[in-house]
Image (cartoon, rainbow, N blue to C red; front, side, top):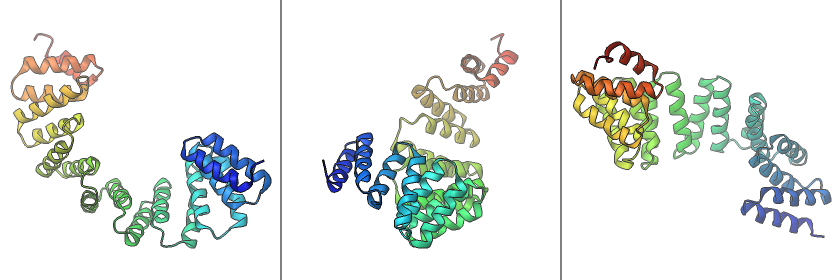
Amino acid sequence: MLSVTELQQRAIDRYEEGKIAEAISDLTDALSQQPDNATARYNRAIMYAEAQQHAPAIADLDHAIKILPDNADLWHAKAVSHRALDAQSEALKAIRKAIELLPNDPDNHLFLGNCLISLGDRQGALEAYAKAIQIFPGFVAAWYNRALTFIEVKDYYPALRDLGKCIELEPQSLGYLIDRAKVYATLDDFEKALKDYDAAISKNPYHAEMHALRGHALVKLEQIEEAVEAYDKALKLQPTDAVTLRFRGAAKMHLKDKAGACEDFKHAGELGDQEAQAYWEKNCQSV
């Protein structure tokens, strides 16, 4: 029979190899010998959680917390599993306890913010994200989640500031550029939106949505021929995008290319776009 130490080490090795069920089995054998081994309880809980078995994970964490009530990691892990089960209030209690025990851990404050968002407390979430940023100014997840929260409450200028910080911290990420461009578009600042779409496309020219969004911005700037070209690129990458077909049809109609417009409306309608279908039926059947 393997010792508890040997079983724990084999469990870790198996876990690192992706053999989660076998690792859990080893820890179960270890716990049959030492039921109050808090480390084994914690490790098995983490593995249960990764396997989406959150109820047994919480049971292990509760047992470990009875042994080590002042261990912040145990409370944080418990919060994670409660939140995965959509028990947001229980998750909130657990993460607040983790913060009480370890107040300068930015991950705890980020998680608190996420819980508060789920409970509809956006102001509390903003404060939690701010605390995470105060502790760790380079914490891009906290900057980003705060930006998304500002967008939710329609406070767009702080959102732009936070997205700018995300871009500064992770300049190769497309997502932050895309989100900032969308905020600029919401504010009708289509020139800045276009600049961000161009930057995103320079990083990934095969991103169909970026070409389509670039087309929308160009339409707003009344650069219709350039917009059609942008839609062309989007549709080359994603030929069955009915919405982009409809927008290209509208742009072609603006350029008095009724035949081309109606072809796009018809194709979009065939792909299920009801708005394009209705337009084609009203204006194009004679073309």
